[in-house]
Image (cartoon, rainbow, N blue to C red):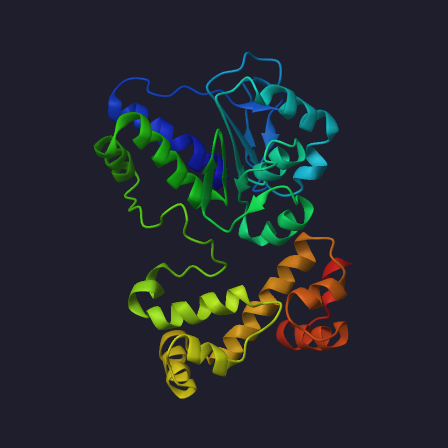
Length: 297
């Protein structure tokens, strides 16, 4: 729902600020019927995708289980229709549909941070980056709802100027903070980047080393702190130790992989830096109170 809203509502607000239609849009679905979002909200469709005349920009919005909902026929329609648009974009899992259609081969692209590793392994001809959103030629991709809002403000700015984009942003009481090239983070670090930049820097290192965990000593050296100093900062800011936070980060990542992917327990153990599936299972049970395999029963 947020990805849909962050795509449409900035355009609606732009029309309101301008006092005239600056943007017009149509909602197309694969079968022309309403679709139900993962939160349960139904979205009405204006037409069936592939049966309407092409226009300025095509934005493909997708979320969980996109490969189930969009089979070969849908991917084929995307591939066939793409050349008729001046620009084509993928929001969140929309990047996957563009990639499956072969549109992103030879281009830079991103997707939601939870899926970046799988995306890169699946599509070797794409330069996969962790940026919040990417514009490469006539194609653009975003990592999710918030980056999409920023992208739409960029689109508005490119067409109507900086002051107009600021007015649209003010409608939502929204302060643009990130640049397109800022890396997506599994931990929202906005406030920490200002209040405790050392803690934020340490967390960024942890995020980048889930599969091969760095020692706390290595992390402390990287942020130019002593281990004791880093422990005191984490204690004061997050009320935990760097080691406990790091382990929590890895186990949270493993839980997402268990519920949202088809990776084996062994693969998840490797991706989250555990030496074996048995060591991972013990740590998981200690942290969450249940075996990882239980989550899939």
